[in-house]
Amino acid sequence: MIVVIPTYQRLEITTINIKLLLGQKFKIVLVVSDQYELNYYAKFPVYIIVRPNNPLGNKWQEGLNYARRFNPDHVVILGSDDLLSKDFHEKYRGVSIFTGFRTFYAYSERLYQFEYLPEQPIGGARIYPREYLDSLDWQIFDTKKDRLLDDKGFYAIKELNHQIVNSTEVLAVKGNWAVLNPLNIKHKNVKLMGTWEGEGAKQLMKEKFGYDGS
Image 1: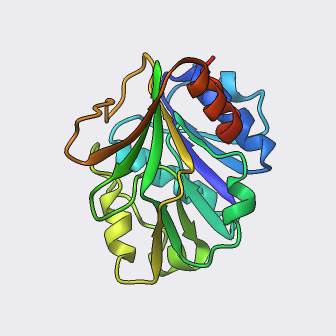
Image 2: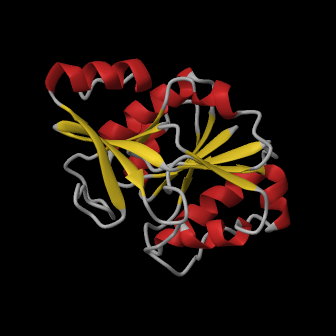
C-alpha cells in the first residue's frame, strides 16, 4: 500500500500523520508546493515531489502519477490532516475492490463522530486497487478543479464492484490552517452520531489513532 498526501502550510499535523503512517509501514508520496516544505520533510523516509497548490486537482493527480511508478497493489488517497486508524494497513491491505468509508471522526476541541450522507464515501482513506487504477489509466482527479475533487474518481468506478463500509477509520483533525471543508456539525451532508470531550476524547483518539490532540 502506498499513501498519496498533498499538503500545504500544515507542517505540524502533516508531520504527525507521516510518523503514524510510517509506523504502519506505509510507503508515502508527499506532494508539497514550495522549497521550504521540500527541505523540511526531507528528513523523513518518504517520496516528495513539488507541484503548485492550484489547481488542487492537478496537485492530487500528479501525486498519483508519481505513485504509479512503484506499481503498488493499492493506493490510499489521504488528506494531510486525516489520520488513519492504527490497524488500517493490516485490515485493508488485502481488499480487492474499491473501498471507501461512510463514517468518520472529526476533532476540534471536542471529538465528533459523523455519518456521511451523500451517495459516495468520504474523500479521505479511499482505497484504489491497482487493477481499478489501471482500468482508468490512473486518471481519477479533474486536473482543472480546486473543489469537488472526490467526484471524478468515485463516478468512474461507481458501476464497478465496490464497497462503502461503516467502520470509522478516519480522524479529520481541524486546526488553525486553511481547509476546503470547515467543521460544521449541522451540515446537510452529515449526521452527528456522538460527541466526546476532555480526557474521554483524548483517550478514544489515542486508542484508535495513536493521537491525543497534542
